[in-house]
Image (cartoon, rainbow, N blue to C red; front, side, top):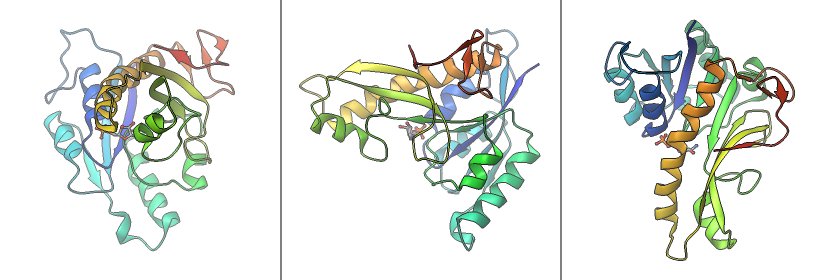
Length: 220
Ligand code: GRF
């Protein structure tokens, strides 16, 4: 059986693209002849109609929806509308990939144990924005990205896996952003592949990999 993924985006969607590629969904229709994970993106939701990721989804033949948060009275109403759209796609996992809205506890609770996010830092370091500049300012020798379960605390849920690089003296926020992005494109598909292959269980506390409680993040 194929794991059903719904991906939430706000922008470029390069992580979405990496996931589509890993699912064999680069163009419309699945490609049975290449080695892909048993997962498929069944829907992509954006809060911005100009998000480039929407055209990536369309090219792959994946259903899309846009809900402008500005059309709703408050966060609660927006999140309820999102739940209605997302649930029609019957996701096993909801994947936040550059989705730039803070979610309400009700939304997080609704998808408890099946809501993942990717964050461009080695959590718990540098929660929030401008992570690359903050890593440089802090003199970090190592920087990277994390895939974590989402809970009510911003960038605060259990970290599943991380990928890291060495910060070079010549690095700027821009070069780090680029290099970390490349790591993200390996990390997210890897984690989703473990879920799809039944190795990683997200709905237990703590999550389990190969039956063992995951007490420290996996390093790629
Ligand atoms: C990534 O850096 C991700 O870590 C952060 O938002 C960015 C999304 O990039 N949450 P993209 O839209 O997938 O290219």
